Image (cartoon, rainbow, N blue to C red; front, side):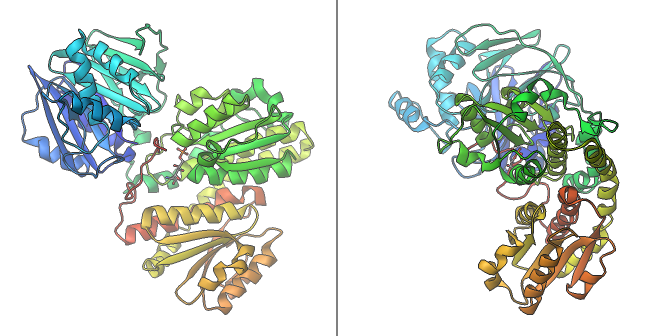
Length: 610
Ligand code: AGP
């Protein structure tokens, strides 16, 4: 979950490293640090707090040098303070290490190193790596050999970068389980956890795979396995541009990402709809369609918001394709020996493509012989590369920690998949064409739903001090309730629960009084009358009701305290439209409470630890 950057070239390293860290800050933001090779010394500066704190701290320090590494941390071992911030150094301060991941056997390694005389100064697992490399460096000729030997002893995950004063013209990077990408410039090279940090400097990149080491000098990069075999790697070209990863005039990335949804949904559908035939075309899975079509069971697995998208996928696929679908948290799937037979197809959903539990689920499903498909946003991410085939979201980089545009694109892509498979089963051409038309109209409807922003802000003003919220919906709108509640929890720190509306009477109704705002997703569909009854049950107990309703539904005003109108859509597309006011509600409440919207406490954008 931490962010890593590295630079070797002819320019001053510090501004490049700080710039990269700012772009990676979404990955972790409790402390940060730099190590610069300056002549025959390695200078290390690190601080608890954000990148801005580090930048002002180093502003008046002499950190000149054109080789360096930088890190922004999300603490796993040891509290976030100056000492535990990365980089970490060996006993003599000759080499510095930054790390993303967890050294699972650090206690055993540390005990052994202590017995050999190494002195530890921090509570982190990462410091073990610095001393382990030092130990091998004493015996082996080069830093590279020492790093490879050390990493062969490590159990766990790492994205790591290392510099040493003894070899001032080399930057080393290695990966197992935590993403790392090498940026290729002219006479200069970059290392980063995520390509967004590289976009201002180069578009040519090479992704490291597990158990690979990059030996980077100003005149080139050599990639080897930990066992010293040279590896030929593809150079890939990054497609996104700088504007897409900057705030574009918005106060927060999250707001920008909410507002760009009409466009990102369009991008997710671009070139994939066949209006005449009334179907969809998904190039990434084209050659694997039979395994999806003839699967007896589809298992969708994911975490967090992506899991909510998977729940909607279940409703879609079962309604239109009639294949039984199960949805499971990836964290549960990976540890409970699930039943996977050759008739089961697994689809994993992940914005980042790096979520540790989801990646482990991919591996577990493959180990059991299943075909595994990925729905990912980040091109070239670990999940995208390890699945048998997949569909990209094309939603552009999502920087806000609270996922918004990725969710609507995930549901869009799941609808395209449903359309494609449904048309090969029982959906008629006319039904398919109708679905295509509805999908084409979707960006305009999301645009209209965004117009609720001012009304939402007024409601937010009234409820910003509430301690609890309940979100209720039925059918396709039940996962929307879960997602609305998650958004509020994540960024405003207000406790919120999502429930199927009919379940309210089985427990949560006990919570309702005049202090409980209840958000109903009450758009017009087959369950509308039932939802109205649920609303009245809440009102009878003096609950305050905010409803997301279908434009033109004036009846609902009689029963609720506030209405947010969204355009009419068929029920299967409702989630994409009705989530919009709920994203805005979470956003405005968080802003009014003075919360850090883009970097909520304790969270990180991609959860690469278990
Ligand atoms: C969403 O707002 C969250 N920050 C989180 O639940 C996220 O969706 C989850 O960690 C899964 O991430 P992924 O889609 O990148 O795999």
